[in-house]
Amino acid sequence: MAEKQFQNSWNKSKHYDKPKQSDEEKYEQNCKMLFGEDFRRYFLQPKDLNYDQFIEKIKSFLKDRAPKITTSQIRNIFSLVKREKEINGLKRIRPKLAYTYGRAEKNEQLKELLFLMDSQLQGIKEQSEVPKLKDFFEALIAYHKYYGGKD
Image 1 (cartoon, one colour):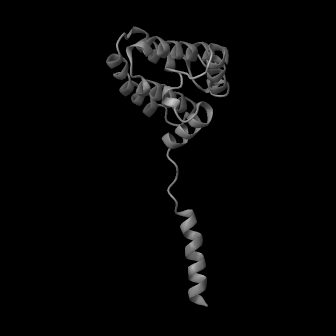
Image 2 (image 1 turned 45 degrees about the vertical axis):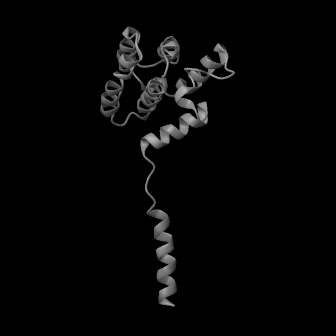
């Protein structure tokens, strides 16, 4: 009888010992839900997505997140993206995103936005995608302001 009680309590405790999902895993799951499995290339080569749909996806992503993110936090990143002309230069922005992510501490909205930005930088493969990436970042800035992002 005591062994059965131990086994029952052991089974219950194993349920609670599952590793907690990391922030990055949570953000990846959210991005997959919003943009699909291939979210890292979603804004670079949208399949069957017209520009209005592209904008609607960005708006839906930023609607609840924008008020908790300051303009300077993302404008600094955008200014770096805007200056770069080559893929390798754009890829070099990723450590700056990591630094900003680390400083974000408990700002989940900013962290998720930085995760999405980084995923698009990871996804870029061809020089012809550079203008699309810049359009994506420009739309982020515009709709961040539209939804009342902090100054």
